[in-house]
Length: 125
Image 1 (cartoon, rainbow, N blue to C red):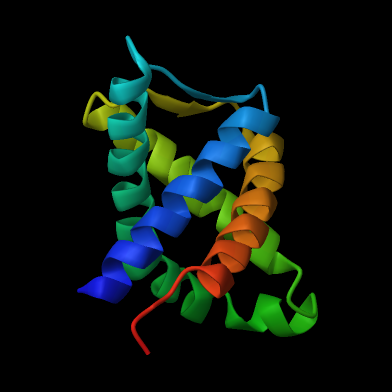
Image 2: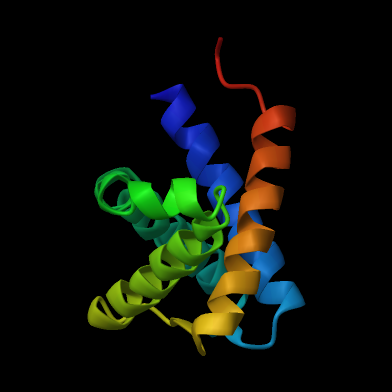
């Protein structure tokens, strides 16, 4: 349970950095508390997408991982971010990614920041 909370906090921090850096990724709320709540909901959605959908996509695109020497990971991460944006729209959460290339750069930022936060934050091991 502790590991889940740490990963969610890391995802929320990484998403916040992506929202801050890229103008094509938007997150809105009436005040700071609502924006933080929205960020946590989006982090949970993003974690759910990465837990359920990403492994299936990785298995289906395994030959492309070999062919591109892993660079297809950028595309897969972008697709997971776009799927999270779509789910946020379905659940009426104010988070939006403007396009594929924004999602590619956002996915790269989220991956790097999430990795760095997971290194820094304790995970209970």
